[in-house]
Length: 235
Image (cartoon, rainbow, N blue to C red):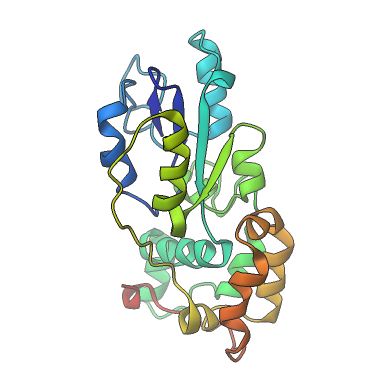
């Protein structure tokens, strides 16, 4: 998260950090130290990966009025987000990697997706990394009533510029493009059941992404079996 008390804004990157260029561009206006992790720096009440709900509580503890701040969250196209989350777990989970190493299949995408939740433990378990838990949360549960603006990751530079113009600052985001997995790469993972599950669980996200627009590129692609893509093949 990124905080400016002088300009009264808080920005929450998406839990998988699709836009890593945001922090450096905002640096001239940031005046609140933020720890690298929950236990990163003693005495610093804010840390990267903090959810909007946790930030609200931390502001209250510090005697600051969270409601006085412009609160911005970057959200993702859920089809692409859940695909990336699956790839990242496949690359980092010790059990998944061990299974792959000895020739035992790791969970297929469709089965894995059904076991995740858009809230609570998300795609993790008690004690797992925050990106794994919050990465699967829907925008509805991640943002809740705690933010004033949601910004789409693949249009973040343009939409953030609009928000910060109203605040009165001009970060140099430049011409940024977020390359989400689309087309054939997503079609390799999604079958009709998993496609429908995303539409059911992430309705709020898809409305923000104009669902009819983000569906169209995949409608012409054949539905294929959700064959697993081994972690070592993921770029």
